[in-house]
Length: 130
Length: 313
Image (cartoon, rainbow over all chains, first blue to last red; front, side, top):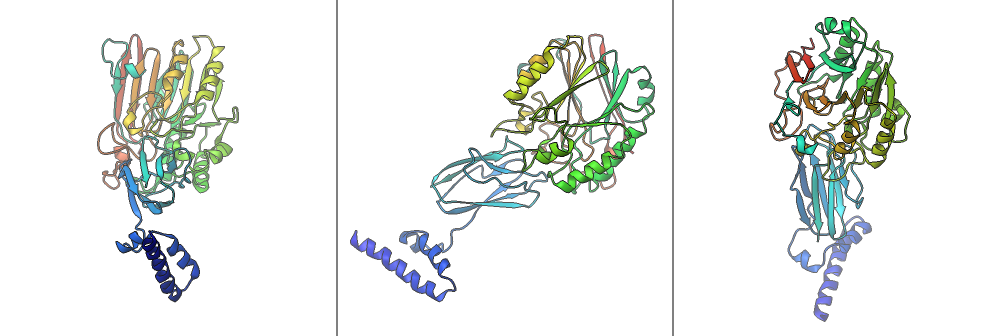
């Protein structure tokens, strides 16, 4: 336990030192707040955004599982506009997305987020945040 | 209603469908309490002589759409209005059955309103499509085009002995569902019709089809069966919708369902292709010629319903 705690602390300290070389303390805090030490070892320096394509009146993938803190980006590939809407208003709705428009939501809390297109409600999808 | 969708047995409930391309609009002639449809064009002139009155329906103008197959949706809407104006017997009013705009933008509503002012008819009645209520639940649409009878936007009126009802089925849609009327609107509809005799001809209009035309593409309304149960006692009921950019017709007892073409672009027949987006594979310059000629005739008992479509240009 102790050594693990130490490891984490050292890792933070290391980050702080390198952050000090960077421009902003705020950026440093943001980085320090993100993944635990284990995640840092497995590379992936930044949390990759996960993409969902809207094509032919469907979300692809229809169900997406991500880690907490992941940014999910929807991009409309249809000629028709679509509106990303959370079932139960768990996150903010997009505006009307025209062709090639994107909308992004960062999911910070674990849970299951069902969503749909408010103008084509047969279009449904789910984000599972772990 | 759901049960009757594919019921082809017997003469009474026949399912007739007919695909057509985008088109100018439909001239509706009321004859002896029964509505007759004609394409806007020369052919309607003779047919109009024994009609008690007529009105025209246009739909799905999608102002703001600027892709193939129609880079000029303003032009094709203007041509449709001009065709209405060219009718020998002036229609008493126009119905626009929704999707005035593509993205509910104020400038799109401005453009639509400007073109509609070119109409010689005294009045245009509107109902919103799902494209007209993006972001504000239709506030801008209702502010500009609403009849202001009911808080929810639905309304009714009487014209020369015919009762007209405009319904809203593009708001408060539920995940995984279709169009929706909602309990409040249904209660109002029931009350609105309660005092009418069964002989009163009814015309009911809304944007999305009020019958399960093709639910997997969202072409239907979740609670339409309840609404139809209020209409069934009437001798002549016409239900006019837009949304699917093609002509589809269904006769069920005394209720005739009819979807209109778009003034902007065609969509594929139900289930043809991956989804209900615009049909893009139309040769440049050929759109007007594609606004095809199509006859739809359905004989049910002694009642003949005829739809004749002609080219826009």
